[in-house]
Image 1 (cartoon, rainbow, N blue to C red):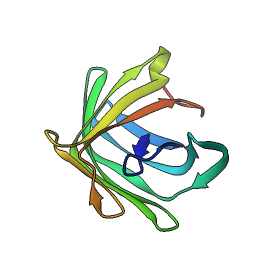
Image 2 (image 1 turned 60 degrees about the horizontal axis):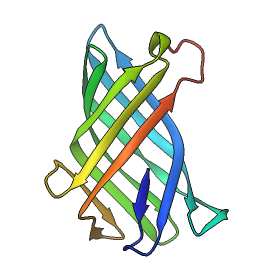
Image 3 (image 1 turned 120 degrees about the vertical axis):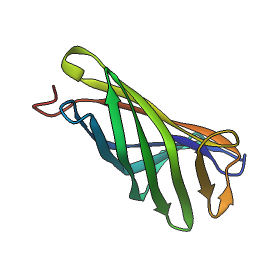
Length: 137
C-alpha cells in the first residue's frame, strides 16, 4: 500500500494479510495489519503503524472475489482511514497460493480515504499476498 503525504513524499506500507476464502459458501473475509512504513526519502527509518483494515461481506466466484473494507492505521499524529465497498481480487498460483487485489478510493469510486482528516482525492491500494503457512490450498 502506498499513500502520499499531501503530495510531499510517498510512504510505502508493508504488512500482514490474512484472507479467508470459503469456496463452499462463497464467502471472503480477512484483515490487513502489522504495517511498517518506508519513506522513499529515508529508507533507513521504518515507521510502525497500529490498527488495521478489515475485509468483510466478500463473495468469491471462480478465482475472483469482491469485498467491503474499513479500518484505520495510525503512527503518532498521522492517521489513514479507509472505507469502501469496491475491493476486488483474484486468487492465483498452484493451490491458491497467492492473492492479488486492490481497493480504489476517491473520486469515481465507492471507497473513501482520509489522511489526518483530509480527503484523498483518488488512490489505489494494492494487495499482494503469498501463502506462507501450511494448509493454504
